[in-house]
Structures are given as C-alpha cells and as structure tokens.
Image (cartoon, rainbow, N blue to C red; front, top):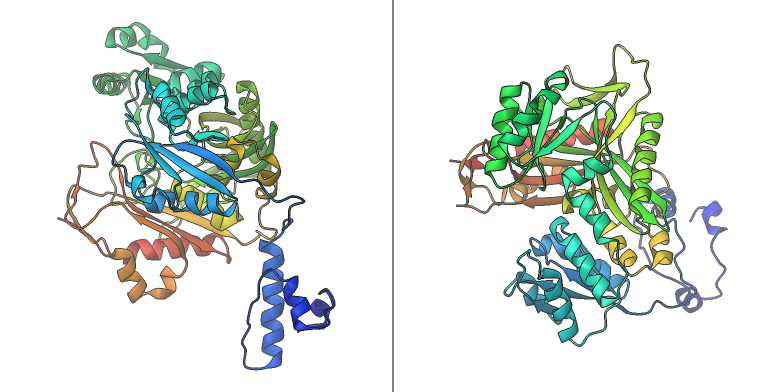
Length: 512
C-alpha cells in the first residue's frame, strides 16, 4: 500500500478491530507490488471522487410510508424507485388500475397495491383518498411521477393532510397556455385558441412574427408539436390540433439552443442544478437522417457546454419561476431555449457529421435571455434520470421520494455530485422509429454486446420499446422512439459522441 495513503488510515491492532469499523472490503489483484500500489492509488482517488459526502447520520432514520400514484410503464422503468426506497427505509404503496403489473410485487418491493378507477375525472382525487383511508395504513407522504397525475395527487394530499405543492401552481405547470400567460416573453407573442373562428379573428397578430410553433394545450414528449413558416401552414396545423380534441397554443419560434434544466429544490434554494444540451431535432434538420421530421428529442448531452454566462441566465430564470409559483421543495425538470445566444449548433465536417456547439460568426450586441418552455414538477423520464445518475451520482427518483415527506436533511446529502467531473460526459441516444412496419430485433443490444463488447461496455442504460412481431406505426403521423441507450465516458464529450454514433450504426434490426 502506498505510504501516503497508508498514513491516512486508522491504526488497528488486529484484523478483528479493523473489520469492526469497516464499511466494505475490496480485494485488489496485480502482477507485482508496483502494480498493486498504482491500482490502489487510482481506486482511492475514485472512491474520494464518488463517495464524497458524509456516510453516517447522527440518528437512525425512521421507517416512512409513501403512496405513489401511478405504477409506471414497466418494471425496468420503476426498478430504481423500488431499490432507492428500500435503501432509505421507505415503504411504498402503489395506486393504479386493477391488474396493473405492480400488483404482482405486492408484499415484496411494494408493501401494498391499491386498485382504483384511474379515469381522469372530477372524482379522481377522491378515489385516491378513499383507497388510502380504506387501506388502514398511515402515510407520511404521497407523490406521482406522471404529469397528468400531479394535480389530482396534490388535491388528494391536501385532503389527507400530507405535504404537497399547491394544486393551482401545478396546474399552471401542466397547462401550456396557463404557463405562457404567467411567464410571457417580451417580443415573443403567443395565443391559445379553441376554434378556427378564434384563430382567424387573431391571425393578423401572427403575421409579423413568423415562424411559429403550434402545440396542444396539454401533452408530453413533443406530441403534436409542429413548426409553421406561413399563415397557411399555421392554419392547417391549428385546425389539426383542434380536431384532435385540444386547444392549440401558437407561439413564436426561437432558433436558439435548447436545453433541459434539472433542479433539486430544497427550502426554496437550488441544492443541485444540471443544464443539458439538446441538439436540434429532425424538424430543425438536425436529427438522424433516417428519421422523419418531428420535434421529438433524439439526443441529450450531460453536462451542457453553453458559456457560463448563459448557464447563469438559464439558472436564474428557472429559479425565479419556481419562486413565483411558490414551490418550496421538490425536483423539477424544465425545458428552455436561449434567445440571442452566442452559440449555435453545427454539423461536423467529417463523415460522421456529429452535432457540435460553436460560436456564432456574428455576435449580437444584446444580452442573451432565457425562454422557459415548460416546468415539469417531477423527476425526468427514466432515460434522463439514469443519465444524471451515471454522470453526477445523483438519483432524482429517490430525491423526489425524500422531498415529498420533507426529509430535507438526507435530500441535501444525496444532492452532492461527484467531485471530479472534468472529463465526464453521459449521452442519451434516442432512436426514432424511421418508418412503419413489423419490427424484428428485440435482442439487438444483446446481439451487439456479443459482437462488439467494447462498445456495449460503455452503455449504462438501455431500453427497447418493441418486441419481435410488434407493429410500428407511421412516424409521419406521430413520431415515437424505437429504443434508447445511454453512453458514459470519462474521456470527454467527443469520445462519448463517437461511441454513441458507433453503437447506432452497428445495431441490427428490421422494420418490414
């Protein structure tokens, strides 16, 4: 053992005494003492980097019980929730429709499953309350990871006397037109219309400000979002949105860089902030060349590389919005664009043509501003949560649990990122369905792991949404993801980009 490290370890008279104060043991192997010393030094540095927070509490934590409304898409999407809850002594009770897959976990990862009618109607929050009371269990908190369940869950929390955010504030976050009314952007008009007559009456307001983005009043994953270059295009898109059953929000398009902003918010302060780069999507002529034009995300890069001054503007704008809405605790996943940014996205000149940020040739004299697109008062989706955990060592899913019971002490401890991040980069690669047909290739990641293990060993998370024989719908009508995977590199952003590109090119699947 290197002398400088040996001197920092506590003295122990015998092995038994040492083991009594030991958390874990690592057995290191090497061809000679010099190699062992080198390996031990690197291991010690890595442990200092990764385990850089207090490892003990002054008092043992009390077991708590939390109700989670909505069981989620699949076990793979909820495994981190169950593991995290068990690690911090939280018992989970899940509310969802009868027969949901979580029901199979009752008595194991899930203490209890409460089946209810999940119809989103006026009586929904009342049914949540009734099921909790009928269970005979005492709850310390209630939360949900689904946007459309946030408001009814908050109302249920109020009736149960549990900590919660204001349902009115949550409603502003989940309704795009209410959000824009509360957070207007000077020089960037927007309007929300429920009929074509209303649109025609206000169409003249739009003409000086094209292009525009048209989107449904409520929605997720960029569903129904489109860009209009002319008044005729806007009219067609608004009509299609209204025909689908939603009011249409129309707002001026911003061509500046788009980012995700993720906050851990404790006692009205930012305990952790990540700002993620999102390269332009296929509708902006920047996504994968085999994917149809849409605003669905194809890539997210952690951490972002905009200038510190622009990160500061984004951070302060997001903080001001959460403060205005009266939030005190929670995790928040926000989307924004930078107006008058000093940077722009370009494609690489080599055969890969990978996107990269570069300074604009002509710098604008005005200061950059941030436009918040939306605030999601919850953790990110599974892909981005896994990426943040791999990059920073912070588990947003677990933090949402702790903050819904106002366990701010442990939440602060678990919001500390790794110490050394200078060469760390995680990238989520989203594979957009290229065409309609029948899918074959459910084992494409395992196949690549067998053929090119050096690529797949860089993957920290992978999900595929189709099984062999499943029908892939026409993506020109509504874009969706075929799969996604997350690459982590400790050799820098360019390395992570290259590995992600190589994996995309070598995955084998068919849609026929």
